[in-house]
Image 1 (tube, rainbow, N blue to C red):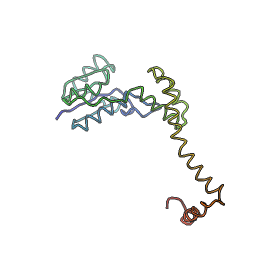
Image 2 (cartoon, rainbow, N blue to C red):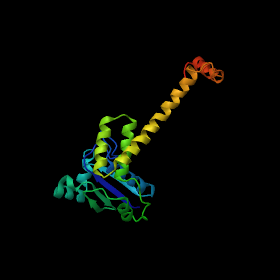
Image 3 (tube, rainbow, N blue to C red):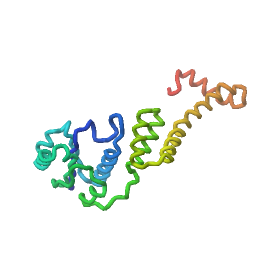
Image 4 (spheres, rainbow, N blue to C red):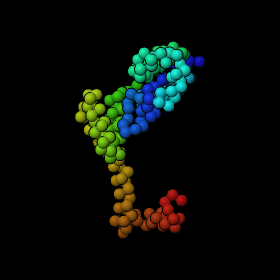
Length: 199
């Protein structure tokens, strides 16, 4: 069975979503490794800051570190052979090295990842997150119109349940004399009797 071993540089985690910002490259690579695993490929990752022994025990990795330092990382080995060093390979590269058919091209580019992050920052009211991902998106050539579309969509998703809740409260509290009020009253009474909305 084909085995892929990834030797990462020092980091808190390999997902790309921990810490104060999202790293689209790590998110993409983590998804690529998940895809490899789903194809029956054995995948293992080692983090220099958390598993230094794995780096010291592997002769090829140790030599690469002695020669290039941490610039040699990330380093990817497939069945014991070094396939790449100093950058995360693409899914196409991983597939070819593992003897798999070329995968369906991913649309989750770095630019798309930044649009997702801008939307998430908007929905969570995170001012520094928005500024950080706006700068990254701008450097990737993402247009202001696309960024605004992401903001608008996120805000609509955020506002919809809030408006529905306001409409519900208005039906209960502002239109008690309306014909619909008696129909909803038993629900409110039942909730009060049970002591809460979820029990």
